Amino acid sequence: MNPLVRLLAPAGAATLAMLASIGRLAIFASRALMAAVRPPYYGSRLIEQMLVMGWFSLPVVGLTALFTGAALAQQIFVGGSRFNAESTVPAVTVIAMVRELGPVLGGLMVAGRVSSAMAAELGTMRVTEQIDALTTLRTDPYRYLIAPRLVAATLVLPVLVLVANVIGVLGGYAIGTERLGFNTASYLATTRQYLEWDDVFSSLVKAAVFGFILALMGCYHGFRSSGCAAGVGRATTNAVVSAFVLILLANLIITVVVFGT
Amino acid sequence: MSASIALAGVKKAFGPKVVLDGVDLAVAAGESVVVIGGSGSGKSVLLKCVLGILAHDAGSIRIDGIDMDAADAAERTRQRQRIGMLFQGGALFDSLPVWRNITFALTRGKARNTKAMHARAVDLLAKVGLEPRVADLRPSELSGGMQKRVALARAIAAEPEIIFFDEPTTGLDPIRAAAINSLIRGLVTDLGVTAVTITHDMASVRAIADRVAMLKDGRIIWSGPVASLDSSGNDDVDRFVHGRAESQSVGTTPISSQ
Image 1 (cartoon, rainbow over the protein chains, first blue to last red):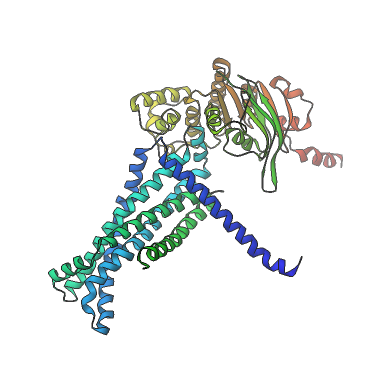
Image 2: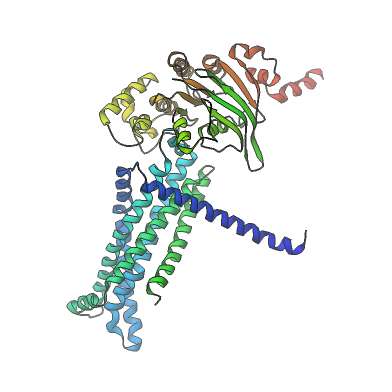
């Protein structure tokens, strides 16, 4: 074999494998979206998934936002003091929390909790033939298993991020007023003054996109799981890693598109 | 109410591994065919190709004369909805109680007609020899044999015209196995259901089958009435029926002659 071909062959094989993966994911996503918009709908499954993803993720998302908001205020104060900008703490905290940290950290925390659980559950169903059994029981697995999870995550994450934003700002407020000497009323007034509707809107759009991504990754890797316990373990790891990477990539794209000008 | 199945030249490979290499098999309406063959010979893959769970690479699969490759998606779905399946491991849904598992095909997974569905599940449990209290348990609370019987109840709940049984008696004691064999035979004889069964249990083969087909090297190498099983004239069938390993006869000859 030509040495150049031998050198390039692995790169070519890797490119083909990557394109095949993207194609499989696109087909899976389009089938899932078609299943989500066409009846029959599984309302009770949707509510169940919203409860599992939303309500049970509140503690982890709330605590993450609280600690991050508080630490952020402290860092802004310390950093700002180098150029006499300590007074920017309320404004920068609210903008950073709502635009970036709320949706990104909320998305990552929920991805860690939910994508892994989805991949493990669907992966186990796959290797124990439960997904095959659904087909033989006159039920489309995409409608019964995938669509409720995708819709639930897309609807629930904006609510979680909204809560995270509020708690994160309150964390900054607590540090600002208790440790850094800010006046309670002026801290809140400055926060309100600098927070714009566009910030909240972009935060919610990001959250919805992240919710879709984390559910898609959990479902895709779980649904395609093979083998036995090792296969389910691989699916779980791949779901979390790919959800994290895609959430951060999507965040960059949305930020550039919305705030690039 | 029964339907026929015809497979012609069905092929299926996973990468370089050829599992089905031109399977020809015809099952008449209301007939019970048992497919025998060694472990890993592709029996389960064969059933999954007919069900559409796996896509076959070549050949044709017809249900009541309708070519499943040529039919549109709606027709394929309609035909496949006539088929019930008992999976080897049961494949019960962990998250649902037994009664909802059993009535899943009737409700399509929705929680409706709760009382009537619960009563229907209890009736079906009785058919497979389980007590009514089992209806409210979770699959994880059942033994392997009980799970298999619940799965059988689920497979017959929607009264399908064709039923595939993948190892229906594995994990059952001989008395329960005989009861399940009798139930399967009753579905064929009394209700006219078309049945295709995969099993290694020769007692089951003799109790269930009208006809037996042996799958080896991806092909049906012998097919005939169950009555001719012991006089098939086929070495592979004889070895399978009498539980003799292929290498055993080769290996014992030199030892005994030494």
